[in-house]
Length: 455
Image (cartoon, rainbow, N blue to C red):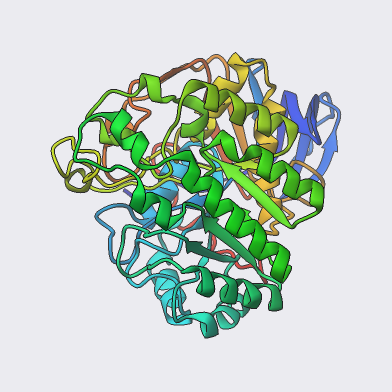
């Protein structure tokens, strides 16, 4: 199907617009891809010179989501996911920018050649803006500076096996060496923080029981690994970011590190905020992820840590796989691939759970748009202000959503969110001032982003 002609907007008018940290009535004037002015709601538009989007009173106008943790898997494992399907799902869920993880693709993004392969695969397949993380693995210390110079937003490493042989973990000595280089080039190290030795010692029997899987990924593995990350930051001065925090038992440790002034930031994910172990059926690999979804009290503590600022951002960690990989072992959770597909519905799910807890949408937007954009240095994204990119979403309380996995745009119809019901949904996405065609998002609309030259 050929893309429809672009619908360039000249203005967006809404009774509730997130400007700064407040919802205010406003008319947003657009000049091509940027916000040109923020005017009162009743600002005259007779000479606007283009299409005006009128947001219904039941909805809020927010900056587009910036998701800095997405596994696209292309090239090499495109049967799991690809740029066309991932960015279409993103656009439909209000995600206007994503940053792709360096592993699960073949080759991984651990060399400049690997980055070039990513960019070649992405060309002409982007419905939203896409940037790239580099990878830190044994033997690529000399590749970090060239990758950083070529525009990756930072470097991901594992402290325990990643699940794919081409992206091995760093041992403690290698981790410290890579951190020293990260500090030297003023980059950011993002860390999958689970301790390999503790995981090796944990019981991991073949089992269909979620409780058994949970015991195989104990809180102590996160605590020990995060201590290693903080010690490394203290010793080298490197900036570090803790990925997909699941264990609330680490929060005191992180709070003390913040008080000490260590350069550490922290993320968590919608599945840790919206699900709990008690509600997960046995033999249901769509809920399997590492680190795992823990109990309801743990979930409550993660929400409190977001409110208190101990956790900085919320990202999806969209990590899909084929049915063959997810169902490997016929329900044996030790054999199934670990990863949750939630790119299209993550923002809607967090907004719904936040509302249930009395937390305003302005906080959710900050965690999933402004703060994520700031994490990777995309200061023109994740906010509605003069000069910012005109990347926007409409969340409408008059448009409830029943998630049907077969209707989601990501490649394989498997997701923990299947069957979930939400009182609001993303009904409109604007990318660079252009209204996204929800029937067929334009795969030529997105741009490749770089740490040095974000458009």
